Length: 254
Ligand code: NAD
Image 1 (cartoon, protein in one colour):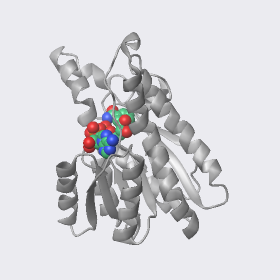
Image 2 (cartoon, helix red, strand yellow):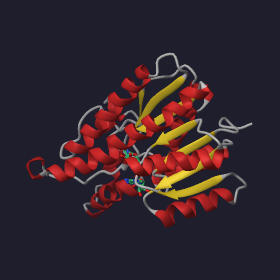
Image 3 (tube, protein in one colour):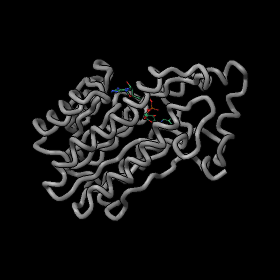
């Protein structure tokens, strides 16, 4: 019996990296999964691959930072599965590393829209359904950059610090309802988002140094974040609420 057996779930940003690994793991653990991503073809490919294993997976193209499209993906999950037991609001963008004085209002608005307002909308739209059924698990992707800011990534770090605050406030807002809200704070993980970082380091011959940033002396893999997201979405985490967990090889402890 899987840890998410029979659970009706949503994973956003499911076409790549951490979201893709999580959708695969949720399905392997017995969940039905609605995979949401702005990249329609790529998300359908992941859903098709999961369906080929015999699991239930539905793909939907949507912008996780758009109020109308968040409402639409929540409605789709209810229509497909009859309800929602867990959501992993994971979609995010890095926005690149722009020098502080070159940052524009547009850059700030877009990163906050996708990385912070998107998870807020996901929580606001799914929570009433979860509260009505008396249970539910919400997981968001923050970042170690939300615990300690990255130089050059001010809006990204602020958006992720905002996600940590969001899960704390949401957990308190759902007092007594049985709905849990937590976040994962990944360190440096090899995904589509970090390709430019690894490429840059490779060109300079310093790729090996990237992993040395943490005591495990290597970058992380998306599956290592998915494992935490799955735990938090499952009943194994039944007393875990309002927390943000670094999964970073020890980076945030150095
Ligand atoms: P990724 O680029 O491989 O995957 C992100 C996915 O999200 C992509 O498929 C992309 O199409 C999708 N997406 C982006 N904006 C979207 C939107 N508006 N609506 C719907 N889908 C959208 O990157 P990843 O590393 O897997 O990122 C997943 C999450 O992990 C992000 O929130 C990111 O900030 C966070 N994170 C990543 C790292 C890392 O080192 N990779 C570290 C800390 C946090």
